[in-house]
Length: 556
Figure 1 (spheres, rainbow, N blue to C red):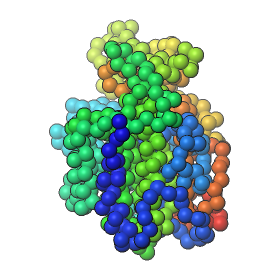
Figure 2 (tube, rainbow, N blue to C red; figure 1 turned 180 degrees about the vertical axis):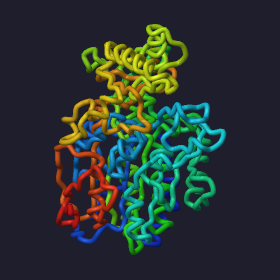
Figure 3 (cartoon, helix red, strand yellow; figure 1 turned 90 degrees about the horizontal axis):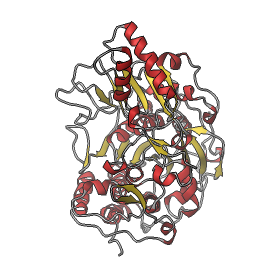
Figure 4 (cartoon, one colour; figure 1 turned 135 degrees about the vertical axis):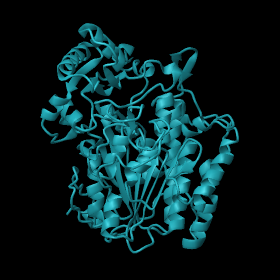
């Protein structure tokens, strides 16, 4: 069964028609990029795209099959081994590195959520992009805020240097939009599960309302399955996950009104890019005296990976459709006559579900032992030491906090016993105390050579991080039961979660590929050099990557 016209085609109809009428007579299509011409002046618009959970492994798997937007980017500067070099390979920390140029240890974004046992509210979990001081809020029902991001973004630095700069950030998740946009943005919009929203009190631009109306109408209609391409059919194989459920053969068929299924489908990214194109048109980004910046957080790949895994028909269809969506988006920018530079990367990688991955991993892949839940470990510690109450809080992968009310002698005893239990577990690679992480040397050199404690240190903030940091062994998935929600995830110390592609493209750029390791914190200083922006304090962790001196992008 063929799917009806894509949401992007519907939502962009007005955008592309108006753009062509206003700026060009050229038709809008996903055709190849125009012939290269010298480009010496700074670009007028920086387009930063983060594809959530787009690992270097997925990039390598699909790069020879792209025909749209990804294909265009492959003609630019290709860094296939970019690193989200820290251990906390989650959405919020990853997005915080891309346009700040700083690792989580300095940005303060150590995880998607962390525990603050000293906070006055009953919910001791703090979400990375919330204002927990709002009365009655909790980490699930929260007020979105940028208060926890401790450093400026590139967009903020650009606006400080030239107030004429406009900064826009849009994403499928609030934390992606906030962490790439920063504290000073002209427009910031994210998908809240039903529509695109922003901070309270902001006026909704007409294009955002149009996007919301188009999406609402689309969600109200049932959608037939996408056509299965010959390439994706090679991945069309059912994987049993128990309880009569399977993944691996999905084609994004959706019942009317199913917003959750919409979010985990190519339609979500189509709507996002359509809205981004409309904001560029209406705000005339790239048409002013200063360089403008738009950050786009494409979140559907992450939801697809979590819901279905990374190696089935679902991910294949998602990436091939995203390729076409970006190709159309770039064609729209061409029709507007904008001199733009693109950088595309990801906030983290990802790992396939163990039920499928174990077929290739020689028995190493497994789901986490529920006994590693911090409360369970804490109960075992309490029984051993003769203590009562909950002793440990946090997550079975990453940070664990010890009850802050314990006297020092008891704290030390709990810490020692918990470390012993964690380190003895066959699914745990190692566990570090906060003292061990603080004493470790700062990371240096290529990211793939960092020790585990250095990876932990890159995402350790003394005021927010846990008392213990857990590193599970490779291929251990921290989801004990795939039948009750997500089937696969990320968040580990290992390179399948740390390695992501970094792709730069601009008209006139001489394409090349650099196989050596770079970091996502290198993106912001590289873009700053591209536009001739002098970076003052605070100094970034990243370094400038020399893209193409002939296009005016040499590092300064």
